[in-house]
Length: 180
Figure 1: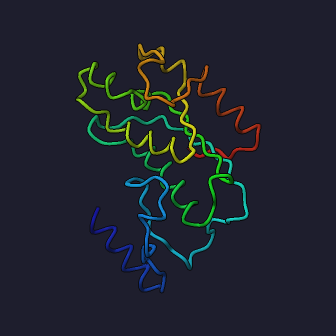
Figure 2 (figure 1 turned 90 degrees about the horizontal axis):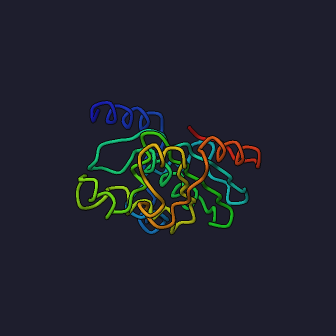
């Protein structure tokens, strides 16, 4: 994997594409410690500070019990990319809806520990950071029930909806772009 990434960086450099990170990327991040990216100032399709972004991300894939979900880190990356591009929180309407294999990522640390998965849910700090950045984190109620969870088991701030399908449908009908 490192060899492939090195080859891509070399190829981009040969094409004259800048892969220099932002001068103060950590300061530009809204979701600090997650959602890393490489600034590509000469690439097309940059964030537009004058545009409203309405996005719903479908998060269904689970992951290992010792790392945050890749899909949640992707939500952080989108948030950080927009922030670094000058898109303010008022112009960012981002919703992450979790279901299926991603359901347990929404557990509080206490509920995670009670399930014997370890002392700390590796997703809880990321979920708190996403919520603090203005991202709505929603959980499919059907997945919650299927996994034997209650709202009291969840990280504070996670909203429970009847079904992920309803959340996606309603947001798409309201003009949100769906990212799978």
